[in-house]
Structures are given as structure tokens and as C-alpha cells.
Image (cartoon, rainbow, N blue to C red; front, top):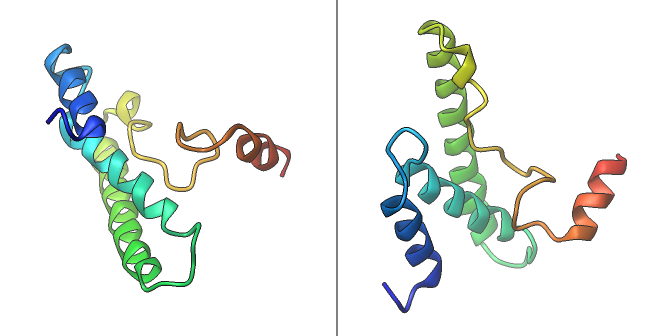
Length: 103
């Protein structure tokens, strides 16, 4: 995995933490959301349609997570979903965060 630095950091983080504080599945989902959101930066390709579908799937996963937390009365865990197009995402540049915070 040394050739793929983004996956290497995910696995290193996974190996150095406990199961309660870190989920490798969530890290893969966050990485996918990042890639799908960045597909909208260049809009002259068909990847935008694929990204739209995959982001909709993540939105459904988020809704299922929230509803499961409500049903199981685990409202303390309800905010552990993966946000879509969040201005506070770590892959957003500083100017994008400031611009979206003003709106």
C-alpha cells in the first residue's frame, strides 16, 4: 500500500485505534464522498452523473443511520453520519469554507 498514500493513511489510522473510535468502512465512505464531490469541479464529462447517483446512495445510507439511531434510542450517535457537500470538509480549500460560511 505504500504506492497509495491515501489508503495507507486510512489503514495506519485503523491499526492504531480501537474499534469504538474508528471504522474503516466510514473512512472508505468519506474518501468516496470526497472523490464524488470533486467530480463536480469539472463538469464536461459523464462522471458527474455517476457521482450524483453514488452521492444519492450515501444520502440514503445517512438517512438509514439516523433512523436506526432514533429507533434504537441512540441519539448520542446520531451525528456520526458522513456529510455531503459540507463546507467544513477537510478537502475544501480555505476560501471555499469562508465563502460558504457567509451564505
